[in-house]
Image (tube, rainbow over all chains, first blue to last red; front, side):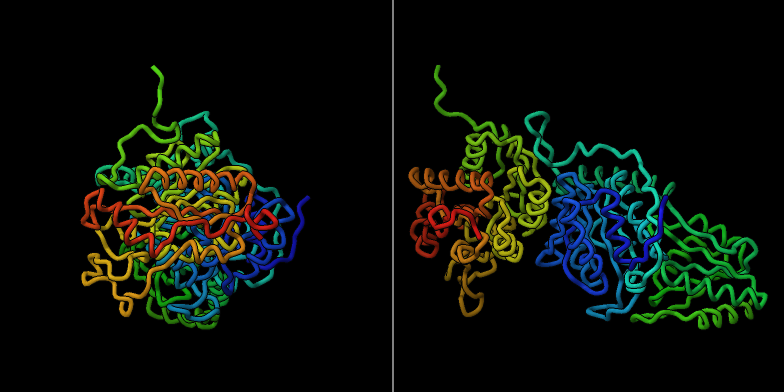
Length: 353
Length: 253
């Protein structure tokens, strides 16, 4: 029988990693992800694993790359400024087709920014985390329960598609405590890592883990092959939660902690007779384009609510493709939108319909 | 007919891309010989760096990983910590190890990672066409120090073995050269020891090899070897800067 444990979001990610067989963590301290590395520093030695504090985020991501290249499950975690430092390594990991899980417990930016929750790394995660043509699987949990579940998903899908996966959470989700039910860990059939550099033992040809292709045609071919995989992922792995969208005139799009604020606002708006619902992307890449497009076709207006100056709204508009107007409400710098402010925006939009 | 000389099994049977007179080829051979003598090709994972030796993943008959510029010791740490009974080595140049990768070098050393670092110091960036390196000598002309390295502007070169020998995690720090048969023999001895240290989990072993770059130095291969002796060796004296076997205790702290 499964039971619920009260945990912080950061700890839930750490425990989920252990539960799905990850025994290697490399990281560097940064607020607000600290509990994650502290939890693993305590737990890893007890399960025969390793929690190693690197000299920098740059070193941590490259240690992660080395571990991934040698064929083991590996996780690293950081927060916004640290992810910027990791972006070089993430590009190499993507270019070498290596699976690993990267946690970003976002804080306000740019620069040193602040230490309060933010979603302003959306562009970075979905567009520009590292140079070159590459994608990350990006998961956006909205509860401590999902912090655990999606971490396990991230490990599996990273292994299946041989690519890095990111949990894009925020300081609020990382720090808050909620009950978590780890339940039964889903057992997927995963591909053998026969490409790993772990010593050929004189039984096979040598493996080379590499992202260098001097011949431009060869490099284009490799990138094309990777994009065929990406296309399959976009077709099959996009996930979202639809909330009261069936009859909605106004459809909010929101992820992570912000989506919970929106649910409260939607409840209040519904009580006033405003037909409003929400699509909550659970994967930010692949983005749930089809669900958003369908909503844009049936709704009269959409509203992207984010803890940024408006980043996901670009994807919402691309998916809506002009079927209805898409408006924005957001706070930034570590400020969390209030339900009242979102409700006010919904009322204003309703008045314009 | 008796075979008196052949390619080491751990050295791939492919043409090397290095310039004529460059000593990378000799150093590759010594690494391969060490791997053969210890019989560890099947248990070894090499980490290639960025610079002239970027393609070294094509030249060794063991599993290889190609790392970002300067990050080879961190990548090697990730491999070694997940496979502690395997042999892991990095093959890095001076720009890679002593400029962009200084933090990774120093911290893998002070942690005492049980890895071997082959550090090829030719006092110049070869791959990008002859720019100033962290080990470029005072007065040395490069494309980015065209009037000679001026200490008041470009600062001083870095002596890696001397610096690393102060760190507790280092088992072996030795500077060798491949300019003469005698020095090649000594280089081989140190490289072999640097790999053997992993077996006994003694800590990090680094062998710095003074190397030539006839192309970017603008010297003939023979004159380049002369320059190693006349200019490099006085600034970078050969020797064993740390060997824990020679100290009490036997293992790096």
